[in-house]
Image 1: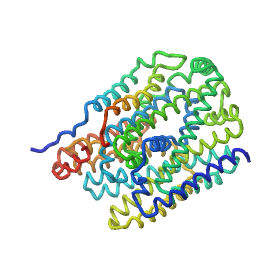
Image 2 (image 1 turned 45 degrees about the vertical axis):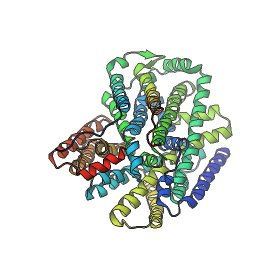
Image 3 (image 1 turned 90 degrees about the horizontal axis):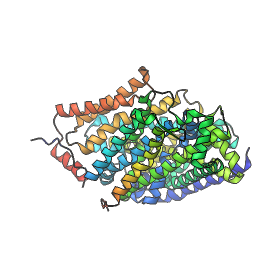
Image 4 (image 1 turned 180 degrees about the horizontal axis):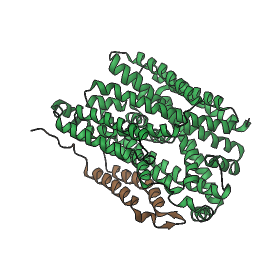
Length: 476
Length: 69
């Protein structure tokens, strides 16, 4: 047991639960407060919350390990896609969604396209893909806590899961927002601190890279992967951001359109600093401090142990937990809203009161969280494949109908429904039944979804004037 | 007559979108993989720079934007 690290982590956990209890009084009877923090979140808060929601467990341990193993160009091409996705979201979806004033991506799609099938299919796609994402994050939390606190994997899973299920269930979006700000600041601060120390220790940017690429030339070059994998990784994340549920919910929390657009771009600027300097300082520096690591994902932890005093080291380790929890809490809320709002309120009982919906959300959060915890005890061996499928599935099925639904007047219900189904089915088929290069499947499924949506829309009756008038209002 | 046109997008944002797509296409072309700076492929540097350039372009455009305020 590492006492100092454990003490810092426990303080951090107590603060997170305290925030959940504080938020409870704000969200008790209002679904607006529970799901979108009353639409009162300002630029500073939303910037950090968006950044933290995107920066998952993979953004500290995974990204530095990936940079150490596969090189800087691979990591930059993958993360540039996510970063570019945010300006695209700011331009293409922020204004219509803020003006719609609802809660989820399903709200937009089912208001734009009057289809009972979509009302059920879209929440199911979200539940499957985001549920898989949560299991992957819980596994990362378990591995990190096991290493950092020297406790068993299962105990680590239980500890971290109970904490974020508790504060999400009682505090809803208010708790997620405030904890995400805290978690975002901790993770960026600690990642940059370690990176800056490494850069200073090894002679600055030029000196460090010259030495590191002399020791390990491959980290500066493209690894032996097909170019379609690089392009696919870029496209998956660039197209995911405008439709991925936990980021879309953050757009709805914004006070107004400009606030949403500013938050999305500031968040990505901070994220870019964290990824760029983290990878250069830690991944490249790692080859000088600890060459030939068998487990590349431990390079950040080795840097922390070598460069920081115990208390700061504890905080740097809490940053890993923060990265995991800040993404998982947002994902959990997105899943809970898919059940309680998208399915229960919109399909089963449209007259449910706010209090009933908040209570259903609370119960749903626990059920989904505990189910994910159960799967995380024995995570599937193909977890990486499933996690990639999670994001790819959302992109392949929802990106085209959402963007065309907002911008092309000709998109109709038949076209969107066909697009969602063909996008989802073709992506899963390519993923499981072909041997295409990793991450490249979306390069086929996305154009297929586009072609089907457009062709079916053109071959069937156009949307009504009333529908187009409603969409026009979203652009006002 | 059925209207199957597009809803208008402000020119500056349309230009920004086209710029992002054009930059991505140019960066993925083979020329960027044939040069190195400090031992790191130019492709890597360009992708790294892209992470800063894209949000900065948008923030510059937003300075003159009063939408939704």
